Amino acid sequence: MTSTKDLLSVASAAAALKTTPLNILMHIKKGLLAGEEIDGSWFVSGASLDRFRAEAGAAAHGSLCQGKSHCGGCGGKE
Image 1 (cartoon, one colour):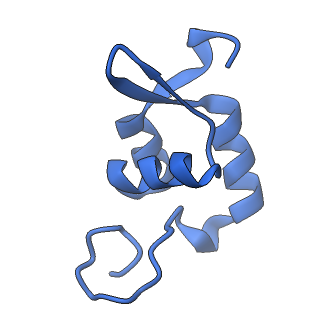
Image 2 (cartoon, rainbow, N blue to C red):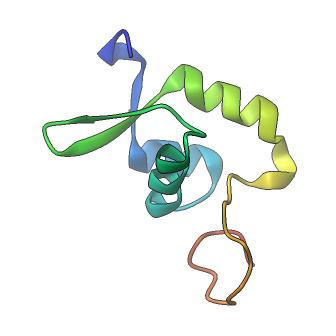
């Protein structure tokens, strides 16, 4: 990533996508969001978040959950 000005905390990215911080970390691991670890904390590129929103659309709600349980923890089940 090019600038720390463009970075959002995992919690902020989760709030923007209406999901959980764990789900954001899953997005980073799968390469769906660009993330960077700085001093033990993860951050998401604002540009990456904007791209993801544009590609995923509102229906996805940012969830990677496969719906195999009904825990509701990923934000994908209501």
